[in-house]
Length: 130
Image 1 (cartoon, one colour):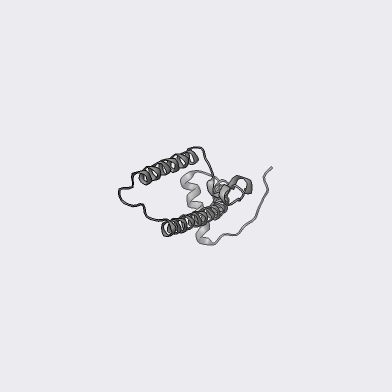
Image 2: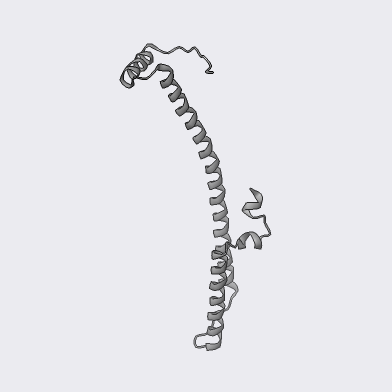
């Protein structure tokens, strides 16, 4: 059973509602009910947008931290590592092998869904904290 409500509309809104009822051939209560549904649905969508926005902000912050950490590590590594002498075939071969190992491990983490940053920093994974 439907609940009855009494509401007051301005003369302009009342006239617009009556014109819409005549054009659509629908009852006033049906049009008002549809308008109320649309309004309430929009409110729910706004709440969802707010929640997703917070998650996106957290992800952006995580990305910024990761980028900063990688940048600092590369800067430190380049500062403390001695340059390989030109023509040192052994050092170049070792360096190439290490880089190939790095690429392989990175590919494994990416394709396997590894979360190296969380493992390395001993943090909870995003699934555990959600």
